[in-house]
Length: 115
Image (tube, rainbow, N blue to C red; front, side, top):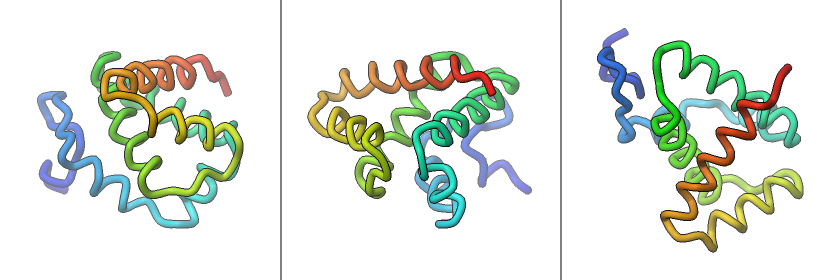
């Protein structure tokens, strides 16, 4: 598979323009499994963060990716539980700077999730 399909380039840089495409490739059944409850959502994030760290992404790159995913979820997915609803509401009322800080907090929350 060529590099043009990947969010992370061979040099380790993130191509944020590929995030929407990557998210849209997740099928509905998988989205339901991930978002069915907050613990499965955190566990999924934890696994993805570990993978991203293993290929060398730093905390800022992780937060940028989390920010893109959170924006997508807030705009395109209905919350499936009260925690997701709260995150969506916080996201929608936050400034861009506050959203970025919330993305950092989501990364920290998921990093602490040990399975």
